[in-house]
Length: 201
Image 1 (cartoon, rainbow, N blue to C red):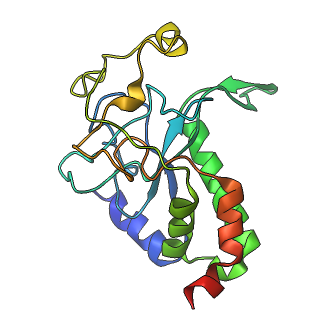
Image 2 (cartoon, rainbow, N blue to C red):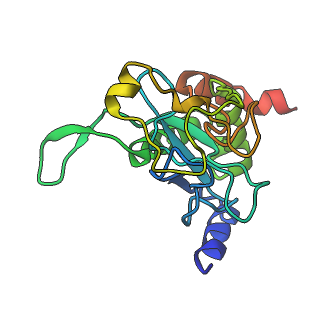
Image 3 (tube, helix red, strand yellow):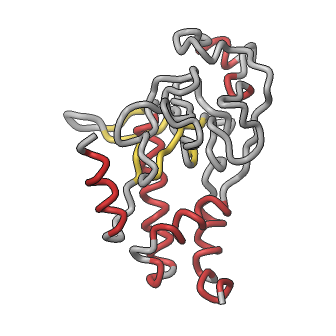
């Protein structure tokens, strides 16, 4: 894959690559497209207003490498207000709405502690450690092998189907292949970033 060496080079240069995980859920092993599947990037799943994973958010593990957990983290990606092509504002759904939340969080972390600029491992650790953990259970109410077995919007609203309960890759704790390390918490992340150097000494 010709893109992966480029992603590796960006990381080595201190450039953090935040990538949307994809909208092919709820099936497992749907984080399958580059660059979201790469180990060197920080892949982001999408949560809804109730902090549950959305039905469309792609899940891991990465096809061909079940040891590689994806997504890395989750962020709000449902009913997000955004600018629209052609002007004006509206709401949209997708992991492409979630990814910018994490990119913005990286900027906040680096602003709070400039010593972290370019320190990709430390920045990722801060986001992981400050996230709100979200576990999954083994019992699946959605067939993980069939990404088209998707609940309707009405079913989700009425809690008739909970796609967040479906574990992928037999990983049920934190992190997992549905939420990653959980949903971001910007306040906790910035607070942790401000004391990061002192805590590591």
